[in-house]
Length: 159
Image 1 (spheres, rainbow, N blue to C red):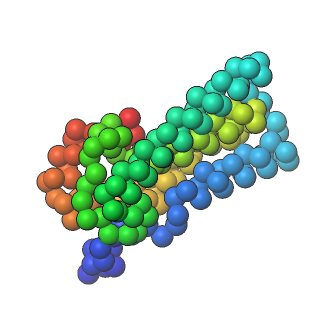
Image 2 (tube, rainbow, N blue to C red):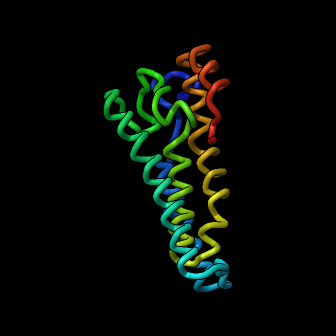
C-alpha cells in the first residue's frame, strides 16, 4: 500500500496558499522585467474590479474558515477530515478557499493594473488542482465513499 492510501489525510505536500503568492511574484517580475501587460480601463474601473474580485475572494475564504472553526476541523488539506462540510458556502462550491484565493489574486492584479497577475489566475487554479484538489478528492472518496460522491454530484468543484 502506498502512503496516500494508508494515512488519514490527503497527500498534499505543498501548501496551496503559496501558489497564488508565487503567481503574484511571477506577475510582478514579468511586468517589471519582461513586458508590461496593463489592464485596460480607467483607474476607477480598475479599483471597482479590485474591490469586487478581492472582496469576493476574502468573503469566500473567511466563510470557509469559519465553517472549519465551527466544526472543529483543521483547514490544512493534509490533516484528517472527520466529516464533510456541505453547508454554508460548501453548498455552492466544493473549493471555496481555492476559488477565493484566485479571486483575491485577480483583485490584487486589477488593483495594481498588472494583467500578468490576472492572467495567471487560471494557471494558479490548475496548479492547485494538480497539487491539492485531486489528492483531496481521492482521499475524501476513499474515506467517505458514496456520501462524498453524492456531494460531488450536487455541488460543483468551482462554481
